[in-house]
Length: 147
View 1 (cartoon, rainbow, N blue to C red):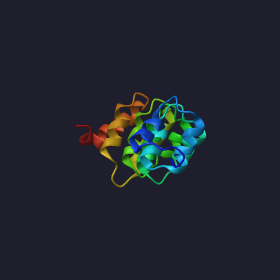
View 2 (view 1 turned 90 degrees about the vertical axis):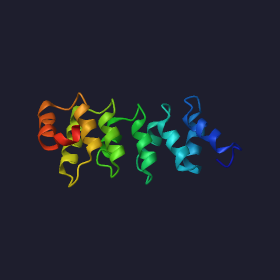
View 3 (view 1 turned 180 degrees about the horizontal axis):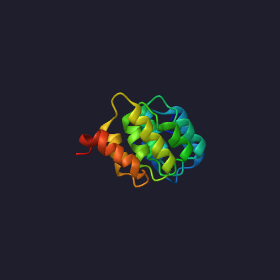
């Protein structure tokens, strides 16, 4: 951040600190590296409008940290359920705010891929919200991924 003279590691700490004022988080998102934006994305006090912005980032790490934020709402998780990054999708499958419908949607999406990712399949399989019929399909089609 240009207006604050701090070492990079201090800016990262500031970005993830829940006590950092929202106006500072907004500045960090605008002017900083993807690592700092990732830390803003993981900050539990980051406002929803910033999370929505970060969920659209080109950088997969920023999107991943957005999904890992415990306060990321369902609409953002839904948008990221079809992300190109398997890490993002696997973390959507693990997110506590993921609804049954979202987990099933992610399962259907993963199943439709030419090469479903085994990490996403495992995360879906372990999700208690995944219906029994989907677990049976995973066992049948992707059983080797579960070992």
